[in-house]
Length: 413
Image 1 (cartoon, rainbow, N blue to C red):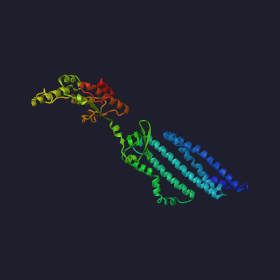
Image 2: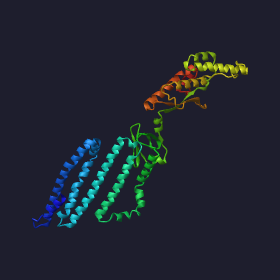
Image 3: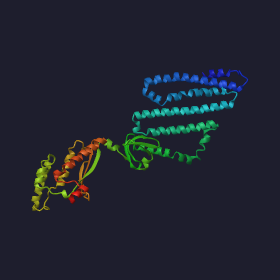
Image 4: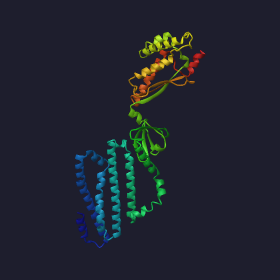
């Protein structure tokens, strides 16, 4: 078809005595022909592609439309027509014809690059839909390929405009290495960091990470070429340099989510003045608690037998072995947690006594909640410690609390 159009234009005879007017008319004819071909191309080619993809890959068709990939590839056809017809249309002005031809070639390369960019974005969206970006930094790879294509098109375009070989420009890159490294420092560091993050599976989309240095505490939205985008729990967005995740420390909560248990590590501080040995009335009262009834009976029998062997005067408090309210309280907490339906029974569960200080005696509870959802986790933790503080009087124990103004007023009264 283009050969036929070339023949028609070649047969064109000047109809005026002004060469510029003939050239202008030929240029107009060339533009009209390119527009007609563009319309035909859009009607036929794009409609065929839409019908074909509409049946075989409708989702891909939607993505191609969203990124206007078909429009970008169809825009190349009229540029090709103008490039082929420009030597004939500007026969009276070869320099202008050559310039138009060169500009068309540059425009074709740019349009091809934008089409490839659109295809890369389509592949990126498809990868996200399939969850590939959870295991691979596909956006970083996407941006790196775009950067490479951009550099190649830039070199080829400058070469075409200046009429020099691309090798001429590439040969000077050695001297520009330092400048290039300075300009693309973040890009290079980000790419290397992205490779390390992917190879070691350190951070993926959807992970919950905490990085106080950058004020980040939330879900990873995207791992890009130079930055990692984190949506904090207060819905703000924090951008972290990708290489910072390699050079600095951060916390990834993915292991907690995969394990299915979230740790609770809190202490109940007791007033040391409330700690004492169990007397018989208190033992009788505590035996009414079902969870430690058997424990108290077996422990009393064990201590009674040992004290008989020691043959000591039990009327003296320091003689023999006796139960304490704080030790019994720790045992009660273990039974309570082991029978709680929201405590993960296959993970570490410890109730321990920490060294006493000016704030009382800490009884630390170290266990895991089997519901890792934030709101549920906080509610379960609160319910457990509400119960613990409420049951303290049963053991004749008091929680430690620093005196307040009201306490001092009572002392004055």
